[in-house]
Length: 215
Image (cartoon, rainbow, N blue to C red; front, top):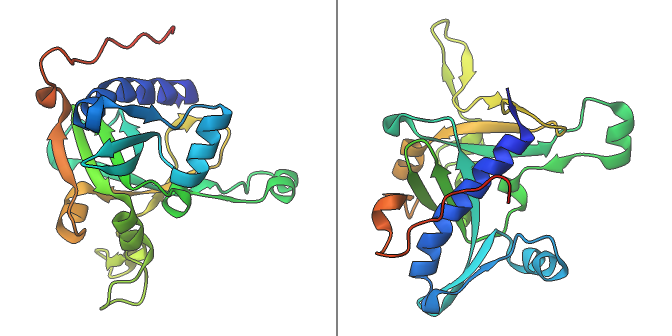
């Protein structure tokens, strides 16, 4: 089982690579890290959300970055949508003291979700507001939110199309997510996610520096 530290290191590696793309795309090459745990970073998070703030074609964009270190098949890439950041039902005293923390699909206010699959060097750029609408609102022809869709199994019993699962990470929070295939989002989101291979988009001289876990 991976540790919480492993997941933080994977996110740091993704940031090192994706920041290069943001820097070469931003007006003037300016990229502001809004995830810094300091007074300015906290205030920027309140107003913009996300990990990065860039100016692109004269418009300020806030970007949230997530990383995946599991998927290695480019035909079966998935997005884990966090429904509960901490369901917190493991301990009654903890729940009475802290309550429940909803997942980022409810709370995140960034404009773009940047989702990076490390093993295949693929990055999806997703309109986060449209992903939230797709996840939480019913389709006009359906009565339940899309994330609650069901299908009949071989015994003609309803089975969740996007079942709940817990991340295989040793962490204190009682986190619950739902896997959503990228192909589904490419078909149903408007605009659809943009998929690219990160290393192929680097401009000369702007390659990412090697990740050093000890820094």
